[in-house]
Image (cartoon, rainbow, N blue to C red; front, side, top):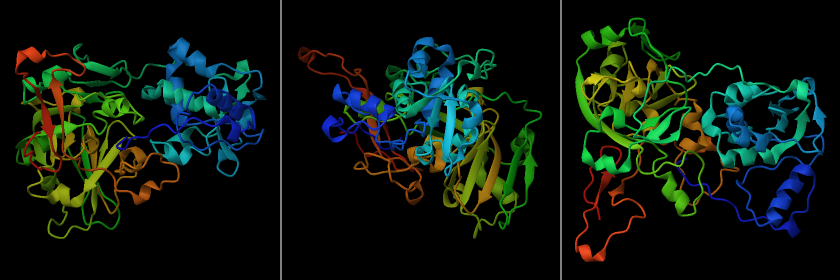
Length: 463
C-alpha cells in the first residue's frame, strides 16, 4: 500500500468482554499482551453468523495447500465451531443474507470485509457461497502470517471432513514461468516477485534485464507473436474506431521511438516503514524494487491518433491498458496519454532486445514518471474511456494516495481519493548496506545509492 497501516494498540480486556467464540479468541490473545493485527470490522456478535475475514486472507492460506505447517495452523478446527454443510453456505451470497465462503474445513462470513478487499469487492464475490480454495491456489502472494491471522479472527464454522476441498491435483499455473537469475532477492515464488540485489543497483545506470526487479500478480502469459493482436477500442460515445494491430503492424506502420526511463514499484522500501513501526500490508520490499531500461516501441499517441481520436479535443478522459493476465488492468489520464512530450510507449524492445517474457512480451505500456502499476505488461487492449479503470489495482485502497495521518482504511471511501499516478522524490543508500559497520578510522566512506523523482521532475540534489 502507498500509506502505512500500523497496528492499533492492544485491546484492554476489561473494556472488551468476550461475546462469542471468535471474540473470546481475540480477547484471550489481547490478555496475553498480543496486539490485534488490523483495525478490521468485527463480525456481528451473533452465534449464527460464522465469522471469517478477508477472502484475501483465505487466499493466502488456500494457496498454502502444499505448505503443511502454515496451513495446518490456520485450518485447525476448534471444538466449539459448529458443523456446517455446503448447502447452507451456498445460501449466503449477498450482503442481505451475509456473504459466506469456505477455505479447507473452515466456514467464514466475509460480509464486513468485502468492500475493504484490496483487490476489489467483485473478486471476492466470485467465491460467495462457495470455496475460495481454487481461486487462491492462484493468488499465493497472500500466504503470509498476518493474513492468516486475519482469517482466523472471523472463523466460527467447520465443514465436515467429507466436504473439504482437496487441492492436491490442481495444475500448477506457474509451471511455464521463465527461469530467473538466482542472484535476485526473492520475496515470493508464486507469483514471482523479486528485487534487484541492492548492492548492484549503482553499478549500472541501465539495469541489465536479468537483474531487473520482477513484480507479478499472476503467472507469466505464454504468447504466440504470430497470433498476437493489440485491440484499440473505445467505450460508447467516444469518437474512436476499433482496430486490431499485429506485432508487425506496430513495427512497420508506426515510427519507432526510444526512451530511457526508470520504473519503481509503489511498495518499494516498504521494509523501511515496517522497521520504523509503521506496519504495512504487502510484500516486505527493500530498496531494490526499482530499475532502469532503454525502451523502444511506438508512441501511444500515434496509435490513438491512427484510430481516430481527436488529439486537440479528445472526448475520452482516461486510457486503459488491459493485459493478458486478467483481471489486472490500469489506466492513465488522457492528458498524459496524448502529450507529445509525455513519451508514453507501447514498447516491444527492452535494452535493445525483444521484451523478455517477465517484462511484458510482446507489448507493454511504458509511462515515464508514473508508478509502475500503471505500466501494464502483456498489453492486448487499449481502451479510451470517460472513467478511470475499475480494477482493484486502480481504485483499491492500496493504490490510492493517502496522507500519513491515515492509519486505518475503516470508513474510508476510496472513490473520494485520487489514484496514484506519480510518486514523490526519494532516494536510498545501497552501499554501505543497511546495518553494516564502518570504521571511523577510515576517514572517508564512499556512499552509493539511487535518487528518483516522479513526473519527469529532475533530482536537484541529494543531501
